[in-house]
Image 1: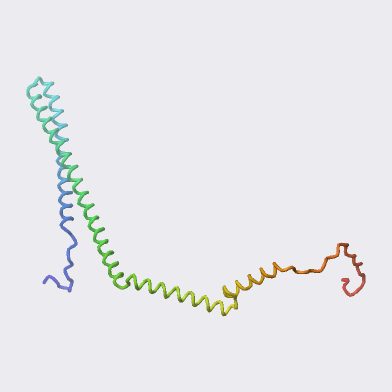
Image 2: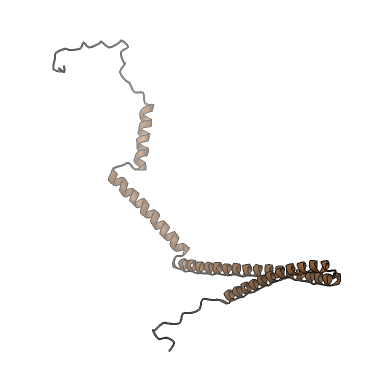
Length: 193
């Protein structure tokens, strides 16, 4: 009777790495709780050792301080273990990111290979040549329509200009005297009233 309303059971997205990270974090949290409990106990034992010294029970205070020292060492080891766990979690999480990057690269490479299969270098060169031919053809059409000169025509015009400038061209002489001034007309057709 599990699929009453036709819901399909979705595939779980939790990977083995996710489970490992979760377990490591749970262990880290347990160690932190242990650390907190030991720290509280150490403070109580320190106060108790003071009280024993006041009461003159030096041997019991010494024994309690030895026990306290041992627990401090355990606390240091716990700190190292927590650090190791956190480092391991970071390593796993970074490895997961690296795996996703590698998967992305594989997909990209596969896509590029498929694209390269569709177009070979020879085909691209052929397309580029055809494109260049089409551009040249269009340029010729534009020149014909616009009536512009071809390169040969341009060269011929420049050669003719050069020939003309090399010939001695006789131009009329310009008079050196000043031109006469023209009197202004009043009341004629050109006057504005």
